Length: 74
Image (tube, rainbow, N blue to C red; front, side, top):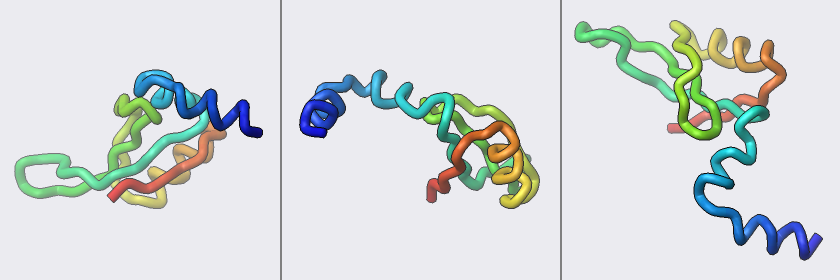
């Protein structure tokens, strides 16, 4: 376990971001249009926007359908 911890400590920022790239997606609230319409952006672990959903539960459902683990960012 100590070797794994040491390897994680030595990861670059880019390496750390790509670590959960195919397993983790995060959701954050966004403003969709100029009229203040809200939505939820789904991002990959590296910050790449994957999709936008109109409701939080739809965002989580979309992530789960892709066998990814959703996390919330606020």
